[in-house]
Length: 146
Image (cartoon, rainbow, N blue to C red; front, side, top):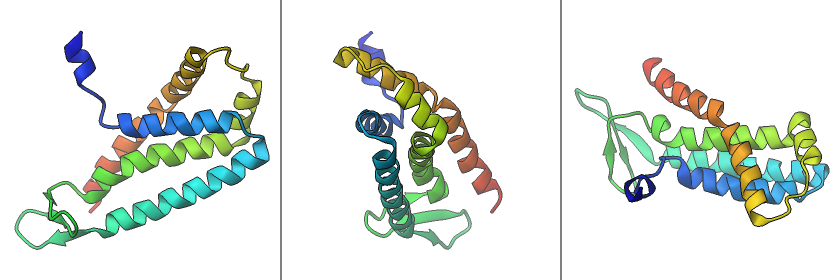
């Protein structure tokens, strides 16, 4: 059992961050939620631009990219490393801001306990599973298109 607890999904930090955002969104009125999510999404898009800007292709026989800050060299396109996290974040923001996401939030009963709130967030995070697969597909198809 300890072995299972010691490993984590590569997107676990992102999903934990999103769980916190969901918790805040659940407590907001629709108009405030939409405005807040627009600001969050704008910040994420700026983070993407900055993060991708750190990588430069290294000339050579095998395509590779180097991070200008860390000098880390990778052989997968930087988009494959950076975008899956942000793809999931942006998809969640779109869903929470959408009319269907708003209806789901407004129709959800107020959690009676912290455990109920965690279960609600977990349930919504499971809905991101398709987005995770799309993010993976996006990363692999973008590298094959180059």
